[in-house]
Length: 160
Ligand SMILES: C[S@@+](CC[C@H](N)C(=O)[O-])C[C@H]1O[C@@H](n2cnc3c(N)ncnc32)[C@H](O)[C@@H]1O
Image 1: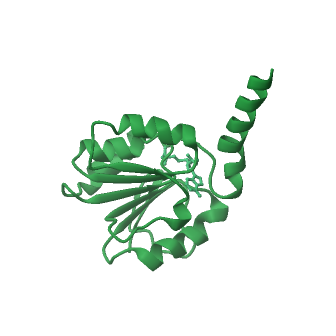
Image 2: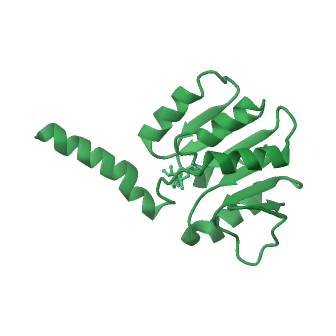
Image 3: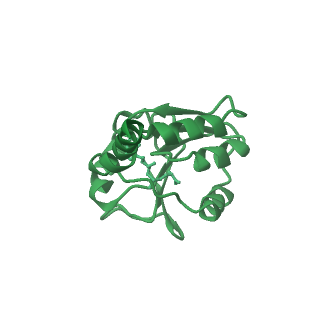
């Protein structure tokens, strides 16, 4: 019984409390992620950052294409799953940590699947750090008042 409650509390903290600091875990569709990477056709070695990288599927797709993928994930279970999935791609990595303190200075593409209440703050984070010409792909949500470079449904692509 005690073991049940320990597991319950760990799962609750990992998957439940997250809603107060960022979006909960809802995976993007891999078909949409593939469409984005096909469309952008980034050159090998480009840096892709996923803010809230979930189970690491975006990181793996980027890595398969010779891109350097960097993920930030607060949920320890998803972090471990991502680490395992990235084991064949030593140039890519996932950090167990908060994306509000992410380093985006080397990013050529930032992938964001967040939620409406966080979009304004995420936009400030991106604007303060991204180099000119970087792409931002926002899955399902948009930045209010910011011109969309291209729509790759359900992704809004921005050029900074
Ligand atoms: C909507 S899911 C997107 C997952 C993944 N990017 C995808 O496309 O499948 C958002 C993820 O962000 C993580 N997350 C939320 N807030 C976070 C924060 N402040 N720092 C790091 N990860 C966060 C959640 O745990 C969740 O896995």
